[in-house]
Amino acid sequence: MKRTAKHRVVHVRWVDAYGDADQWTSRADLDTDDRIIDTIGILIDTSRAWYVTLALSMDTATDSFGSVIHIPHRCIIKWTEVDGLAA
Image (cartoon, rainbow, N blue to C red; front, side):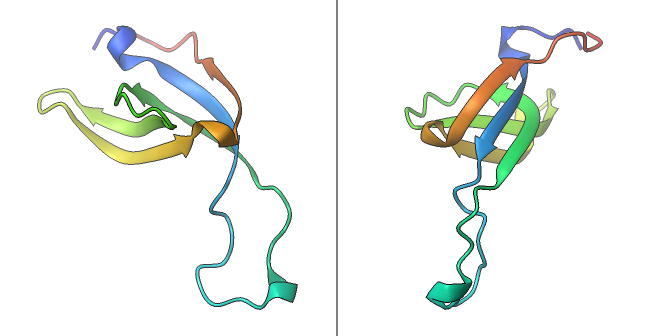
């Protein structure tokens, strides 16, 4: 598969806005440290104003995506296109 602008692969470094416990937690036990996350994926144009959307995999026959993540723009530290991948 030849990569096109539609299939850009990017690296996003971001602060996880959701990286705390998924249960009831006392105030004293809340995680207050930033969790810096690095994500690499296929950039999906969703026209969502507040998010960058990435997928881990893509089925080109059905134009379907797997393992989709929406990263809020305000959480992004830096993002760059990944070069040097096989076409």
